[in-house]
Image (cartoon, rainbow, N blue to C red; front, side, top):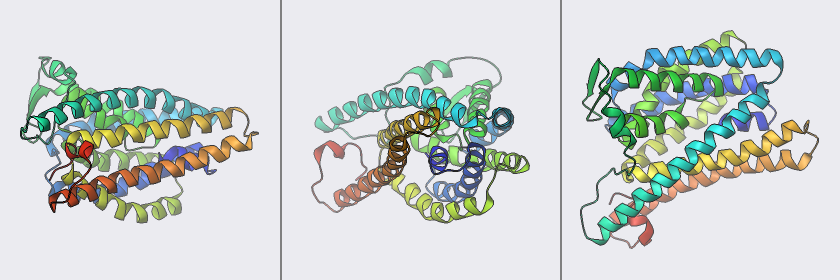
Length: 318
């Protein structure tokens, strides 16, 4: 959300990318510490991904600099965002709805609800790929080919360098649906890996003059508190809840990016498009934070014995 938001509010595309990835590097340190306390970080998986992610980040930075020289960075970043966000949003939302349906049925049958459940079997097929060397990830409780992890790291690193994000909007779904990592561990491991990849990305963008350090530090101040709240909230919900919020964050970002792309393509001549894109970006942030805090409050009420909405009971941990 942040890169399109910065572009919408007048920050040049290259500075939006570099500044966002710089603030994310600092925020991830804080969030990772909290997730480690909650047992949500697979350090071995994160460290294995680091090298390939670095290679991917370098590719992303080079692409950004290439399009900056051609004066096309805003259009290219926003267009690519639309394509990727649409695919991820649809797949994650459909899968999450199916997973919730299973949880609802288990609750109806008075069965014990697991913290994690997925209907997608693609990760299991990927895990069967016997391409040496094979590695065992104790925290994630899975065995998989080293090259699958390497590929995921490279592709998400390239996206991190190109879009100026930690790669989370693609890495978390990739870890879940390709590698088979449990959702909460995917979130924590992604943040740990981001410390290194985003740190490298911010260094490279800084060398290329793509970072507004004052803006990045200002954003980091607010992110320090937000990262703590978000990490703590994961201990109150089940895996599908996290994926549900992720899918809606993608859809809302998609709308904002589409409006902003239309604004840019019309040479910023249609004022209402610019105003609408700003409104959507601000609204989506409030909506998503509201969803997270709402789930946190509902879970707390349920733990204290209060009655909560039935459709949310299978999504929270009492």
